[in-house]
Image (cartoon, rainbow, N blue to C red; front, top):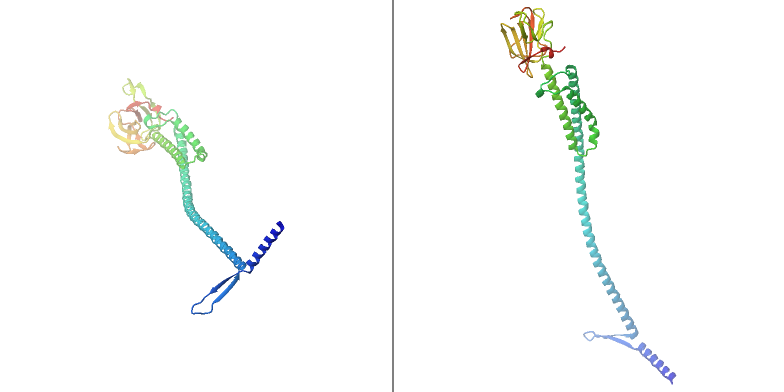
Length: 345
């Protein structure tokens, strides 16, 4: 019974397949103007297969177009991003190029500045060396002409020992200056050190020059040659025979013996008096004045500048005198002092 039903089903299925394969679809094209009608017949399987292939092709085309559309949008977006990135990078490159040019300009300026600084500091060191040489020369002169027992007016002088110690200190500082400069990062600091060093040398040179000027003016040169016939202080007056105070010293020699200025100065008086005879008074500055008396001849005029050792007169016997000699006085702050404490031995 069951077998018969199966066979019937198989037979029905076979008939359906046969009918399906044999069934056709006819397409008719009816033209206008009563022209011949065109007929096209197709079997159903062929039509279905063609339809399926068409659907598949259309689907593939659609999917492909959709993919290309999405991909195109993606690529367009990427292209926009890349374009922006390129623009940003171009801006960065332009900025870096500008920065590089700026840096190169700064480097050129720095090179010129370094060269200028090197020239400047070379000049400063040269000036410093010249000042040192001048100072050493002045100090050598000071050593030759100065002595420790000299009293210098406080307001216009510098102690010799102080000069020597300060000079030694400045020279030592100069020797260490270059090594010290290497550890300093700022040029203005080096410049300050150089200026301070230069100022120190200049001040010391000024002090030494002032000291030398003082020594030239200080009336310490024995004004004439001869025999010391009378000293400063209490004595028996050679004319009256009484005790009196002698304001200077007397140096005896022949009439006409040259008389020299004891120091640099200005002649403030040339005159004649009964007691002093022909007289010269010279102002040496620094509160020093000298008096030259009993002269036979005066060779200078009032207001004239004289240098230490200049011949200013000739020894004589004028005024209150017992024989040819030079009466010589030194006045300090208008007080008469013993010339022998000042005159060079």
